[in-house]
Image (cartoon, rainbow, N blue to C red):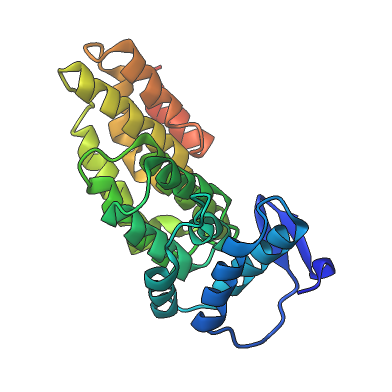
Length: 254
């Protein structure tokens, strides 16, 4: 692949598309070449970018087979496939990353890297959101999980204006809404921290969370809620349409 065919935008590698078949065997061989190449060489950088581009041509089934063959670590403990997947940005790659996260097969820092990368996917799909949604219900779901999934939803909604009618988006919003209860009232400090994280995630989602605005208003106005929770509820309106947000936050008759 010629270097002039490649460029970088939004933290993801891109290039002019060249139609050709890519096989799982070719990509496996590429991963082996990366392991053998010198870690700081131009050759390694070139091979790595080629790996990213070729991953984009593989189906989910082919990616799963590739993972079974090529999830090994190189001599210096590097896993080229793990590092390349977040720049792939296809639905198949996102589904594979979700399955890797759920399986617990990779270290926590790599999981964080996966979630962080979702913010930069240029063409998100409802299938990506549908795949990632169950992770929000897993015990001990991390801050990166909540913020990564909702950042993906925000990006999806910036492309598809009626996104709040998409079933995958509605599923995530229902999950987040259940965390809120009726008015964000929780007792112990751990639950309070979790509540504030959920409120931050709702704010991250933006337009998709408009259906939760009445509950957010109650969370913000309830004086028995901790001040940090009330502030987080107000901040959750930050990406919603101004008119609706202001009317919900103003006191009755104000």
